[in-house]
Figure 1 (cartoon, one colour):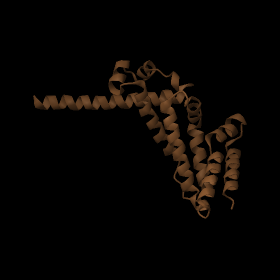
Figure 2 (cartoon, rainbow, N blue to C red; figure 1 turned 120 degrees about the vertical axis):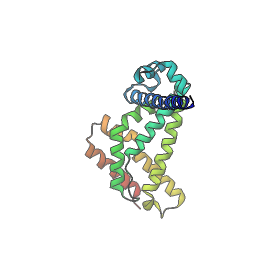
Figure 3 (cartoon, rainbow, N blue to C red; figure 1 turned 135 degrees about the horizontal axis):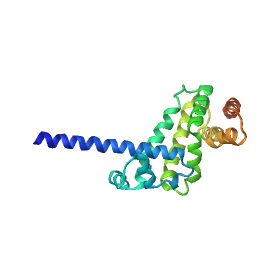
Figure 4 (tube, rainbow, N blue to C red; figure 1 turned 60 degrees about the vertical axis):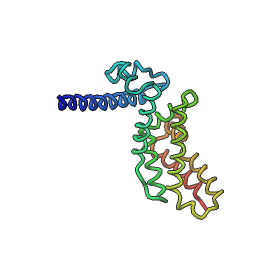
Length: 196
């Protein structure tokens, strides 16, 4: 009897875990395809995951909590695309950044359009901005080491502008530049900021 109860509890726990994964994966998929993230409903999430709205709410409690889990998954996916590069290697760093933008850039752009309407999305993107700045500090640190702290911060801000997702969108989407010329332009801007 105790074995049977233990078995059922284990089965229920595995099912809960499987449902959680299904819901998060379904929400990530919807976010990647949606024109507007804010338009995704609990009904959409339930339909995409093959579950009921009640099941989604039982597991997460609210649509915002589902989004929170999905944004965390997307953040991990996004940062896994940016290959680690040795500090000081400008070409490798920009190449890695561009690879990431090519794969996930338009999701970022859509999110940026909606962040004022979605406080959770704003918090996630604000955290991402901080992570990007720290990445710049790490990757380009050897080029900035001899500067005063104030000048280092000014250069980091300029590097941020030179590597921002909006610049990638301007070059790739709006001006229809190919990947090679986009890489050259961003590299030229970054090297300009790093000049002594």
